[in-house]
Length: 299
Image (cartoon, rainbow, N blue to C red):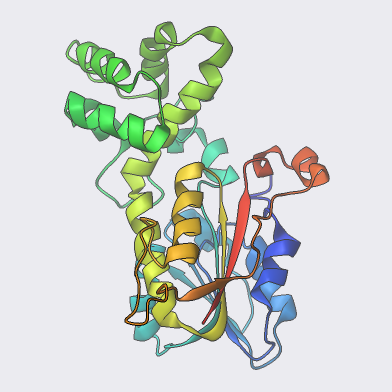
């Protein structure tokens, strides 16, 4: 089984507009699909630095003198680069969300399709797990996470039932959680709502929104003028943040003007219209269906 099939591969590599002698960063290495494609475009003087916080990804490291793989959360990528003497980049690529490897590995706890512990950590050294979120968060905090990160309708009721049931005994695995949740959800939309609930918990566990915000802000300082920022997102929360950042210069989507009344934006949008996978790609890889690609050029 492939570790992860890269989504929008040709479109994202095209979006980087690769300079063969440039320095590039792949912030979400995973199975190395995007990294391999970048290396094919680089010349002898080119350089690629990749990041992944999951130790499993290190097994996929590429044997190439132009390549370096760093284990770390991409929210800190600029600090890692400066430690290695790299100040300026020609391009940054990030394929957000959870990989096929994560979803298909039962013991990682990312999917409700398998029996497994409620782990959900991309970095297994992190202290916060899905189990802690479910068993230790207050009802109000749990409801807020389900509503904000999963856009779950009736989030308050779901949180209330979880809190009631955990008082009878710890909820430690996906099967226990499903047993609690399924009676609350109409059968026709069960898979959709369960996916939203698991997504919300996963985002909280991995602090994905905070990490994305910090990464986007660091990209401004790290890219050379004309450098490209290429982001593939999979749900509306991520995509909204990226879209706002390119359009307004911040993830909140608020106007910031300079003294002359011009909008303060660090990037020009290369693709005014969001790029989505072709029908053929969605048939070959059904996890590509929700992907959205946005490209920015540093001003």
